[in-house]
Image 1 (cartoon, protein in one colour):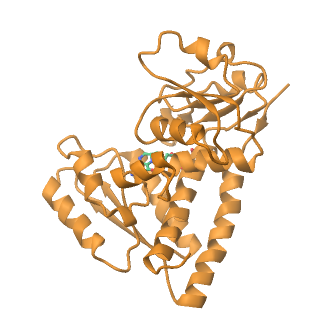
Image 2: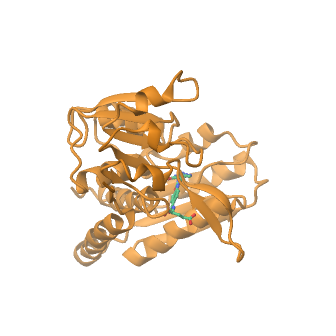
Image 3: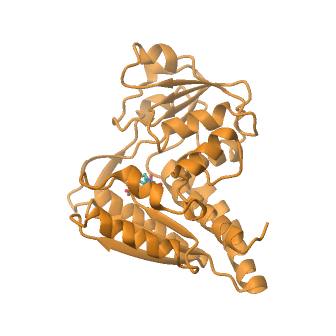
Length: 295
Ligand code: L34
């Protein structure tokens, strides 16, 4: 059996169509244009490509979007000042500071400076806390995108054995929390594996749904999964370059091997990545609504 390939591109397209209509409606009915600012510090090629894609997508949906690009040696206080300006700018509903930041900048300090109601990444402790409590908040974009991929492809999560590999603040921690919550798309039994896990394969082999967010190319091989598993591959690893200089990407999962045993699998590229960008758009539209006290 060969797995159904869950297309992030197609799912993202459908959600973007919905958002485009919503943005047009906000404009028509209330003369509101959602506004986003993306802040990129330094010249990391991957970050550059993600931030460019975020701005392009915003424009395509009718969202106002500004990109601020700063030198890698900008001081922490200058970056804080910039955030403060956008915190007070009523045209901007969402602020995103692309991670990772250069070493001399204290990441938490920056993320804490973003007003929680403009924190469309869902990284501020207020949003993280509300997420854990199951209260209204901005869900972090990648986990939010994973939930949408699962529900829109009809994957049942209630009672499922979910195994998450990776415990980062941006993927592993939030997705494992969301999937165990008493909510639609949750109610799973969740195991989290990480670098200190004794025998990762003994866990992954039990998984009905396997979520790999490690950053090690092709780490999950066919012998590590059970027949019929649903695989969500969050890894976007740059493993080389083509002759014309384009990055060659690989996921955390050995796609060609694992697809023979899985019932469904997300590809890289074209899986979770496009969903991350789309959920940022969704959060930005939500932020604009909230700023104007719309439901
Ligand atoms: N603040 N920093 C902040 N928010 C985020 O949500 C992110 N993330 C992660 C890195 N830092 C962040 C992203 O935007 C990862 N990430 C991200 C976004 C988009 C894609 C991958 C990672 C994506 O579109 N990937 C394409 C391939 C693009 C390429 O060619 O490089 C894909 O199809 O997977």
